[in-house]
Length: 300
Length: 276
Image (tube, rainbow over all chains, first blue to last red; front, top):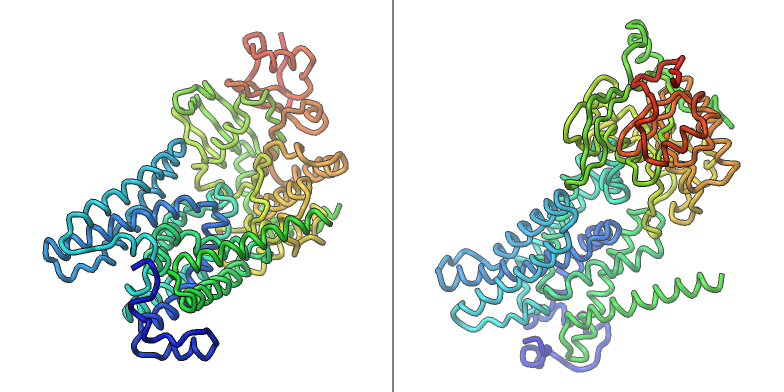
């Protein structure tokens, strides 16, 4: 499944890539999953820009990594419950959401109350989450390819995801907008925020839960292993061009849209797996901007 | 220095708040610490601390690095909890009353790419006014006048990250000024600023001292006697001296780590005490 589009859409392909082809593809009923992936990517970019900015400025990329790997545990348990235990309504997505939120809350509490061993706990959750997922998938009847969860598979995206991602956008924009000043203060200087009577720990956990939900919804586009890169790379690039936090969020969101849509287009026209293509485009832009800003500083 | 322009609104607040307490005879101390012990993960940090700071005092906290100056300040601010003993700030729980304190932390390296402007940083000193964290016009005015006070008004819209270390330190002092109504606590504020700014800072502290209590930590004993009315020596224990009595011998004892030879009292009375 990971190795490209071939079997599924070879019939839909007419070769070459022009804008017209892309439009044709988006309206083609035979490849509706491409349309869903395209619009889910664009809608999710809004949340990714905002949450990614918080992750980069609060420097919790590795925490986001641990949360995303715990998602596999939730998916594994979800698949097992659905297919072996026979709880038909239990979509693996619900398992993923539960696992991600649980990981976010545990990590938040650990980093608040046991600062010394924070990295050990995060590393443990990271590995244990994956191990649980792989074991449950192994014991689930029928063939389940863990690769599609690890590296993304846009065939798994459905129309329901459009609604879920829209709901997530409303939630993230709402929280980010209403608590903008407070979250900015918590990310910049947590101690000062606490002195001003702000429950910084609570906001930190809210931030991690927002991260968890955002990760779950885009795992299917780029996969558990690479989702954190798509969360942080646009924000890291935007960081070079923004003087204020909201500017960074807007620029990161736009960049994320560009990375996802161009990645999907490139992967389609060259028959490449879409997740790695998106990540490589994002990584290349990040390296170019980082190198460019370093050079500019050297020659100033 | 534009001292008179500073934050007229909170000035009025202070007069209103201080008046009733002065009727009670100005005797209610700003900070009261009784029999405090603090240890960090089993390692003793501070032991047997007793300290009283009166309103409008100016107190300098001195002592060697690692002696517990910052720990004492964080205990006073309620950021750390003591193992034993009691701390009262303005007669109440520090976690509630600390909103009336402006605090300049020991210079910390902030993320050099953090997307925040100088005015944003100073406004953070005005947070806590309401639940949502929205800033009112009065917050903006207080932040701008604090920036003016620190001669940083021209940098208000610049990115905090592009300022020099000394300028960043002054921004943090401005943030503390924006939030201080009754007391200003500074932890080694002179570590990163040039001589001119330092002289200005002490002029400013002197002016502020007429309307609020000043508490400042430093390991630089040179400043102590110029301005401060009393000195608190912190080296795992806490000893109070009036500044007039800081002699070479006392300094040697502070940094030598042996306190048993120094007579001390726990109240910083105006007249101080005499060494026997």
